Length: 163
Image (cartoon, rainbow, N blue to C red; front, side, top):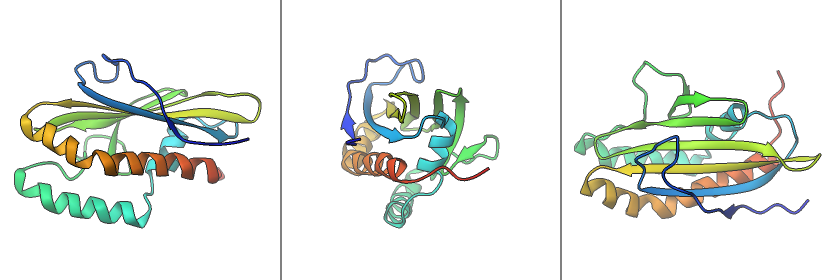
């Protein structure tokens, strides 16, 4: 089964973040047919590669003087990696949080794609609240695209954890 991550159009407004003014979506066929959106979110976002963790450390060091959150951790939400869980069904997991410069959501959708695969999409939605939010998204977009593509690629190679 040929597998390739590709960009797909996003229609705004989106129910996960109705006021979003920036969005992208990537999808890929992932072998298997029984994974839920939450299990795929945990596999894709639960443990980042070292280079992504290093980028996040640099990002947090740069933005913390501006009062931006290093992650959504506030002690009130269940988390996957750095991201609080907003909502979940078997077909969709929504993660994200609101900050002073922007609000964002990561939406992981899963649907059957034949007998041996599932179609997995990762949609990122952003509501840029202030000029700094617009600048921030412009600066991180190339890294964001690489990270999302890497996550989807890793999902297609990794196997679900037992249990």
